[in-house]
Image (spheres, rainbow, N blue to C red):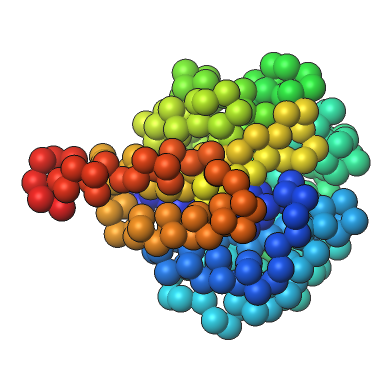
Length: 310
């Protein structure tokens, strides 16, 4: 638990389904705030077709802006789905490449235009190319816990994809709950199965709060040895190519929860909340995050979780 990594995906997953395009200058301001909070990894954007996801049209520009201007300790990540995206990412300063394959055939077709097996055959060479270039790589299994179109997803299919990643030497494996179907017992069992395949693998998680179980699933993942947690400011987000897009686990809620357990007290929750307020003001609506509405319990009581003065 000493090495819990907070991977902020708000600038990518949080914004990708928003219809109101956010100007480059506004994104830069939000990202600067997020970096000042003490998070570990920040997903600047995705290298996708701007006609399909207009919000990501400025991803290359954002990376070029921040490539030489990031605070020490913050890693820039980017999502790529194909070889062209990888080429763009290598050219503009991506430090951590996030690649993925959906365990749902329907979601895979809608998201990438490929079957699961086709996407996997293309993803492995891309991962190896990125690693050969000295870049960090994380590979995910999307729709790992269920699919809005297909319902339950075969656990063995998920594990088969994971085995392929492990055989390729990919060091970090993520399970993404794209449709928000995960429940804590399922989370613990699936991560335990991956641990049985390779006890040394670094595990990551990406939960959506579609049915209100996001934080509960994060806790189950934490108990299972997961060290990388993806979340988004204000609880924004959702895959535009799933049946029922819904927000990510809120970064502020996740950090608040960890801090009440005595973990990651180094992260500035007040700074994260300030960014989320800016985002909510820009979109002129209340965001889903709970701590954004209630405030920190530490602030409210004037005491830490252990009862001492904060």
